[in-house]
Length: 71
Image (cartoon, rainbow, N blue to C red; front, side, top):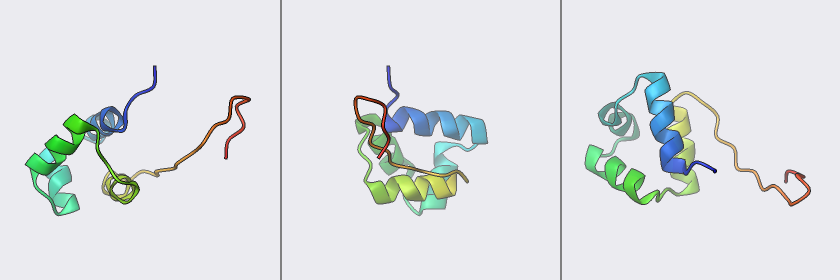
């Protein structure tokens, strides 16, 4: 089972000891907006990059073919 982006963000916040309130502040948005996006798992590529920067980690998008080739 693959985790959704929202689930991964929740895990990263926990590992970084950052609350959703703190994450929202770093992103210049509201806690409600973050909570809504997490609930809907609705993030743009740009938002995921901003979240990675706020959580001090890298974000990569990878396509993996059936033979495990990564593109």
